[in-house]
Amino acid sequence: MRGGRHRGRCGPGYSRRVPSREDQVELLEERQRDLEEELADIADLLGRLKDEPAPAATT
Image (cartoon, rainbow, N blue to C red; front, side):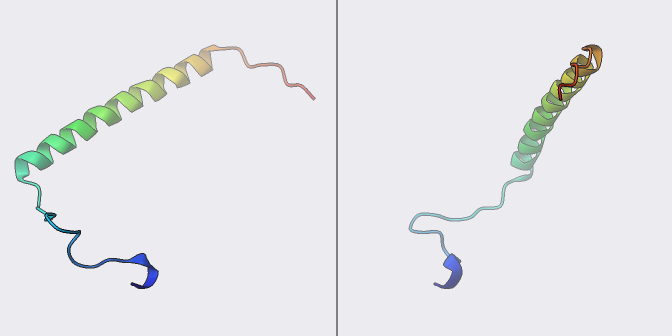
């Protein structure tokens, strides 16, 4: 196959299924929780960086 691209089946016993609405909701809610945690971590880090005195520049 050219370029390593594969079309069709993934192999024996594999089938692609479309996730159900409930599965999609569950995956999206999990992703949202992960993003909210990451956002809280970023806000915490920004707060600590703003509160710390800037290090003296060395040349």
